[in-house]
Image 1 (cartoon, rainbow, N blue to C red):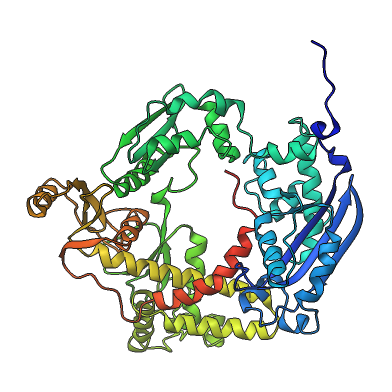
Image 2: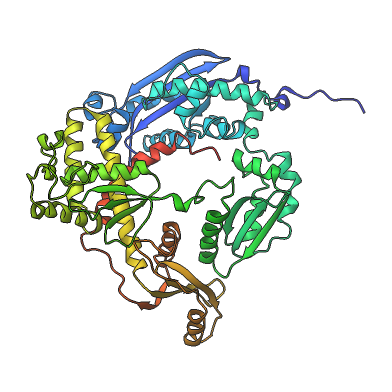
Length: 574
């Protein structure tokens, strides 16, 4: 049979002939329905040559949240004379006409452009879109770059421009990243635009070859293990439908380089069927913490958490420790790192003038006070200037802030942030923002955890799929038993039998003592889900009336915009 020469359409568009418009937006937040564009930056390139640039500030029509100003440096004063989006949009749409759009986490930017078009009567752009985050995850490994953030990739590809959360600078950096990624993709025989777009989603030969590993996995809730030829556990996961979840690892939808690498090593999949979805989630956490599979990122080291401890010395201080002891001290945590614990400690020191020195201080101690006394941040008990009774008031304030009411810390740090923002010291304000968030979020988390870990036994039920009830026995915040009560069965004997055979749990010191914080949080999420009913509560389940949760809600609302903007930089390479 004679060979047939393909048409130009079949050959595709060579990447050297493609006009790319690499663009970036700055916004007041992460939701196009509630937030607005504050800056547009775009660079038009073809064959490595810059053809033009587009850059403008945009008046969002309302105030820019302080947290966003801290992130981007764009203030209300900077955009007060800028054009509105309806005046900017026609020029931008003309600039991108006929080009392939490129952005880092393109979904974020394109959603805002489409929302602006819809709001002002323009059809949404039909341009092809390339996402440098997706492309980076396809061609780079975790050994090369720890994540797919724009700043990380710009350093890796030695971009001439450093990303700084300003639209044009970030777009210029993304141009260098795009060129570096296209060069990498060439080693995978990707030479046309069509090949580039399909390359990200194509399953690897290893994924296709090993689809049979899912054949013996049942349609049931449970936990699955990928193992290599020696039986070493590579990865542990959980699902409400084991067969469907394991199958998904061998499809084009699985694009994480780390997981694709794991599939290449895996030789078998084992599973444990669980009674309920909650049992599967808890088993997964316990098994990951025990086996520490190299391809799991989260939950591998639950024992490495740290705590902020208000010591029991004559003049107590705040200390970062790894162990909970039954010593009558007050603890705040758990924190995933000493850095986060230190941030919370600094935030607490902003509100309460506890001593910050590490030397023992007693009633007989007499040493020269440090500079903190001169700054009014310590009463200098080391010089005898502050009596034990006076210092005890500070200790009680710290204890209340840690366990009952975070308002003094929230008020003190917020006032400092506002002062720094007025002085345009945004970097310092952002540091205080993170310190406050570390304290408030951890205090709110600990109060939720402590509320349930005080309960000797709690039994709850939720409707099971197909009838019946999923029933769980929880003791001191630990899942002690799980079962499915058949439809029509009498609950009293079933619950009695389940509690009689449940794991015995012995309480220990501290707010979280019988299970990892992650396990208890899984249980709390289930307890708070729709349809769950309490069957039995042995004890009192309550939260502080003035707890940190009310301040956490305010911080989370402000951080929601910040976090959504951060997501556009790319989650870690997996």
